[in-house]
Image 1 (tube, one colour):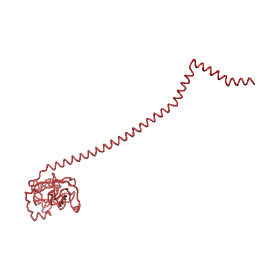
Image 2: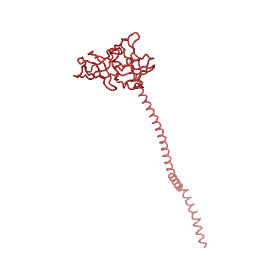
Image 3: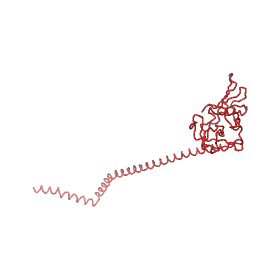
Image 4: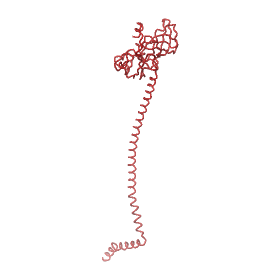
Length: 290
């Protein structure tokens, strides 16, 4: 019984003590256990800390990328807005340059003797009670010296004549309207005729040209000065086609206007100088131009 207790005490207390003292003595001489503990502790700490460090680094990278992407997106949005503003500015400058070119062309126009001109801007087409007619609406009226039957043109050619004038605005009857009649003559042949509009987008007929009268294809038609509404020599149209018929004493002459009224933005209104006196209209001229 005593032996069993001794063995139990020896294995339970004394043997571990001897082993501990032996290892302590051996470790104090060699420091092997210290190195083992240090290496083991570092490895264990590394195994614990490395994933956390990696996770923290990845989180920091992803966070930085998120802010970078957010900042990049905001910068891209600012750049897009700047590009849009620059595009609008370029369009505005192009429009200004185009307008300046048109205005310079108008300013270079030299009116005929005894005539002056007033520049006007086209603000509408076929407006109000005159919408059934081929008309344009301009921003000058009687207060600016604009009155009925005054010629309206551009440096390229005749546009029409003032149809009605209010104090600040006026309507212009275009030469393409069927109610428009302009006495013309061939610039080279000097043959007389009267233009008659055929409607928007259509050619212009030249009436009352005798069958045996001289007239050339592609000849320029200019105002003849008859009826004293248009001064003589203003370009009106160019002959497009000439046909003869055995049933008519007159040629069928088709011409095309020099000015595209659908693209008009600025026009000139001719005004007779105060010291010049208009010639009286004959009864035939008055009837034709009504």
